[in-house]
Amino acid sequence: MRSSRHSEPITASSLLLAVLFSPIFALYGLVLLVRGLVRLPARVRATRAALSGGTIACANDHPNPTVGRFECATCHGTYHGWVGECAICGSGAGWVSCEVCQVSIKLPWVRR
Image (tube, rainbow, N blue to C red; front, side):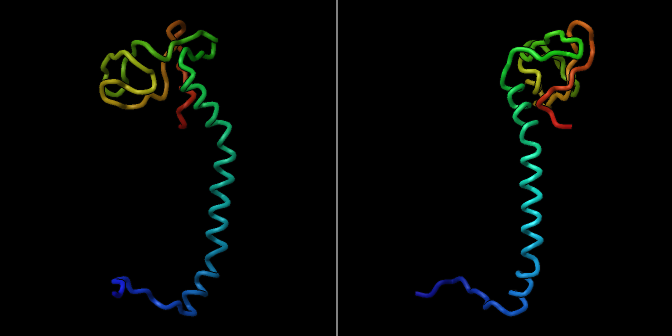
């Protein structure tokens, strides 16, 4: 029984295009790899901060809980839970105010 797939023969022009574009694709892959490796330490720190639970500190070293009662900046609802995501509307937070001095704290796991 014959396969229903029909393959095109490789022509000289398609082979030439593949040879010409392969260094571009290799360079693009190398750029993505290097960019990922450069960003890796920051992502590890951000993941550690997000998973450590507990507290995050403001610029004045006041500890602030990452789990508790928060007001969402998007839906303006008050919820109990993790600071990084509203339990009501699901939007992600980028910052939170310090409970002591009201200084804005950029959440370390948010890339912006």
